[in-house]
Length: 207
Length: 207
DNA sequence: GGGTTTCTGGACTTGCCGGTCCACTTTTTT
DNA sequence: AAAAAAGTGGACCGGCAAGTCCAGAAACCC
Image 1 (tube, chains in turn green, cyan, brown, orange):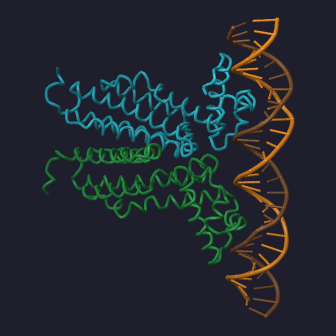
Image 2 (cartoon, chains in turn purple, green, blue, red):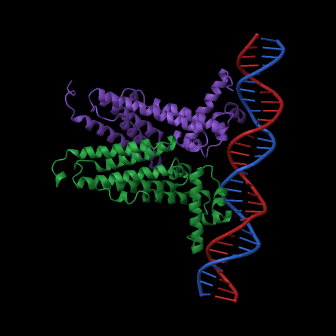
Image 3 (cartoon, helix red, strand yellow):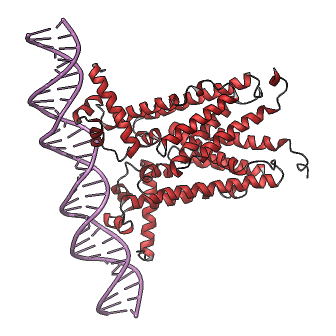
């Protein structure tokens, strides 16, 4: 099935995805028409269907993948090295900043709401993103524990899952209310809780 | 402007809202047409516009209000009396049960995604719901603190905000992945953290 | 450089769906 | 009980946006 794309074709396709992502972020998926995308990207109907034979859903899915890949990238390099408390605070700031900049739109979330049910691929994109994200968090927590900064008894996976949920919730609340306070509260609370769990740890701390 | 509704009219209106809510939950707002609602509720186009002069958005907003009012109701009476640890566990189970039953649809969330941007009323509905919800949680935490089960130094509002975020995130993750694990992890983690914060409290506990 | 494939442009079709209209019935009011 | 107001049924309209088609241009391959 895979059709081969020439260099030019590849460029056009990429232009369409990036442009579509812009429009979708501004207007929201349900009200964005293919003509909007056409206009923004300087393409024609036939090109849209040439590159995305499945039509609108196909394009939306491509945009979802595109947006999804950016979510974790935007948190790097901090997300990759959560092994000291300082690193956690830097990451926390990066996350807040990212979502503050994004404002009250959640490209991936609204895309999923639009095509999720019908297109099975969309769910896969989100599920994988969440899994990777949580894995990064778990790695960070594990690093703290192994570094003696957290008690050995801590349930790493539960903590990571709870933290991921808190972030998602903070973002989702931001979308509805326009305020980033809950995201901040969630992050601060979680880090503070982790920290206080490691506070009165025997030995180690001085090592 | 307010038109008076006869008893019959009231009943019809209620039937439309309830029926529309059903269809919307099943199909999602973006793909649900007024004809779907018509069919489900056994009404005609003119009735729909008779009761909801603003058209589809108007109806959707009414449904949003309807769904919103149920969210907190479904957590009662537990949510109203979070003054002992046992009460918290009961509430936790009620929340999990409610969302497990609801499955992978979030009536309010998807409604908001659909009409939020355009209809200002929708945002108000969500904002108010979240505020009330958080207030309940804060009241519960305050009760624990005043009962000597939590340290006096606890930042009640931050804790409540973080918990609310965690719940929202748990739900939102459930919508994407179909799994309720994150909601459970978030609730369990939060309650456990609160509890451990109150663990080594001086005096009081025996009083 | 000729043949084949890929790419592009835009006119055209199609069907859906929100919204209008108006005639008719039922209920309320006095 | 008659007039007024509220409620109901369904035919109809109009626009919009997804998707189709085909012809011509550009790129690739030998």
